[in-house]
Length: 339
Image (cartoon, rainbow, N blue to C red; front, side):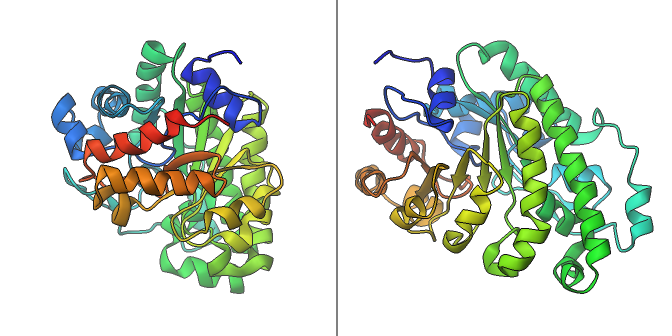
């Protein structure tokens, strides 16, 4: 079998084609303090400066050894773009959403007519272009964004879960708005050089809202984004936090290429619950990658692969204090695995 570039290898792996070995990638956030110290680009500045964002993303490849580069490092830029109040992050901690801007249908109307060149949305797209210009021929360039359900929750606040149960018209209107934004944002990332798209939708949980509401408020909206990406030949990875085992078939029904599962999911069960979707995961980012030894991580990595995982990766975002040697232990196992 031919040896592929990292870009070719990941593309083939995500779309179910034969490949020489497992790609070594992380589809969730990659930034760590050790990488920041090695490359000189630190949070929080690397969240809002395109050059620094690209530099820290590049360190995931040059310092750690991932065979892809990925931006951004947090999931608050989209809410900030629409005026939500953000609690600033630190060198070790990501920013968070603490204020919300939508209560009514009229509030949604006021948010329309946006310009994607503005704010951190524009910064992320600029960082993608920097990375694509440097690495686009060789490495996968991953764009990532918060999914439309979680963005709706960021915009609407804690009332969101009650809203979908009690005010379907409002809930669907907000989902249409956030999904149209996500499609436009994803398309702009692709225009700037992204060739792989990651949707991080942590609160779009089958566990939280059940099958009926997941099918109504999540599936058609994820499908709209995925269809738009497939029109430009960009594979899509979907990550939802928690134990998604019972919802995997619904997640796969969107046409998504790969599903990233977290450490609460049994790897073998995840593989058994999908028909074609590539399963990505699911080393515990806290109890394993941050707090164990490289030897233990290699052992657990092999167990995850033996259970049938298609792409070995962290089960959620990388903890900022994770040692580089621990991530490299996971990468070593992935690169040594032949399908």
